[in-house]
Image: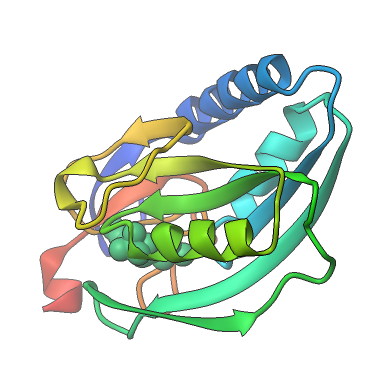
Length: 178
Ligand code: IMP
Ligand code: MG
């Protein structure tokens, strides 16, 4: 385990199993149609790779980069587009792929943004969900794991851009960010 972690919350094996389960759910729901996966950078990269390896449905992949966070551990509620979609999404069945849903501010913004761009449907797939921290109501269609209200890193999730490379989800020691 990385020395900056208090504990490992979710192991690599558990994540790989969850990715298979989510991919199977998605395949069932979109059978016979086409999906556009939109990953939110940078946190979604690891779970996106796992989903893509397991999904059988015809699909395209795009990425967006938005920020609602400063460099700390709490949401600012403001969302800026840093990198936009690379192709139009009108008429597409979009599945947003996210690392973690916390306040819900980011996803709430993105959902409205995609609806305004005339996506045919928009669903959300997230590796982690922190329901206790929700500030805006969000309908999350595919959830890997519900996690407690602790700051977690690894498997794409960062603290000040570090720890994204860890192959598991761990709880950061509070002394690292306090
Ligand atoms: P929301 O807009 O508050 O739902 O924030 C979502 C974004 O906040 C995620 O995409 C993460 O980048 C970041 N975030 C929220 N909680 C954590 C955490 O525990 N660890 C790392 N990043 C987090
Ligand atoms: Mg993120």
